[in-house]
Image (tube, rainbow, N blue to C red):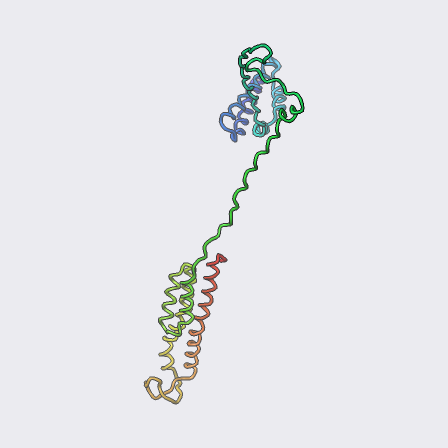
Length: 266
């Protein structure tokens, strides 16, 4: 590469960087910007003539700024204000002449004189335009309250299931699984806590009657003449108490969760 080709190479590299920096502009604005800078460089080269060199080119580029600065200036440049279009002047209407001592036909009336000139001829003050009406107040969006009748039936049947053993608990659990205010995990936990003690009590009956050592007495169901161990009866009583109290606690917990979900607090 010769020394004379060095300025052209630098100019081409500068224009390439400018085109990359102007990718944020639309295609027409980008082409116009790059073409304008290229014409500016060509004009500077033509004015320099034989004295055109790398130093002269760098001086021109330094005055122009970096490609990023040129693009930023093009983005923030204000849009040109269009020149006002003059309104067409209406042609004067032809004036028809009347008789002597009368104003020509079509001519404006003569100015008023006397005390009424200031009242009749003066312009009346223009009434201010009525303000635009305020937009209608919009009330905050309110959601309809969620019905909790199914949930209330579920907690009552579960909590008071001991009144109708078996049926009340099963009906309450069916209502729990039909409800949409409890998650699947909550329904599973409630079912296990409500039915679990009853299943444990039923499975513990054989262990109670077959446990040893036996106390003197009789089998409750005529199974023999031996008694049942006191610890086994105590365990059965504890399981029964848990089976009585736990459904009530589960019903209270389910009702609190359902009410919070119905009010949108959870």
